[in-house]
Image (cartoon, rainbow, N blue to C red; front, side, top):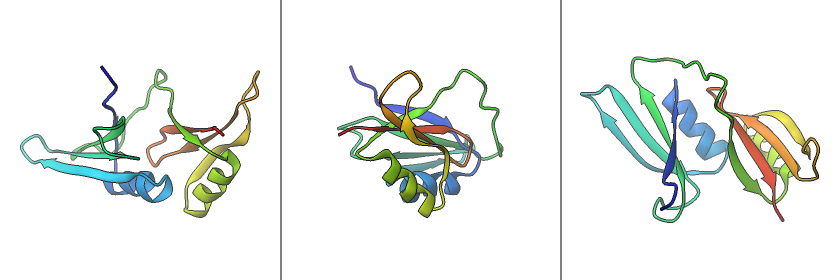
Length: 127
């Protein structure tokens, strides 16, 4: 077994696709409209679905926003340099909500950015 994807419901699919592809550098792998169900699925990731987990962005045509609740945590991405990643994300119009620095009670360098729907994405510095 392996993790295939994580699904996020998004209010504005085009903004979300732009964030994950242009700001975070993922690739739009596939996109399908389901008119009878009034929703669109878009899959984004850093490589083919056959090789790693991806994100499924689900846009329900009649829903503009969602209550994120308090149980959801974040998506985590490995980056070689968290500070440089934050700088690049800001330069591309992304929102950094926690600058790069050591995690509380630890030494790992982390940062957090936020997507257009308010979902948090953690950047974990890995050599």
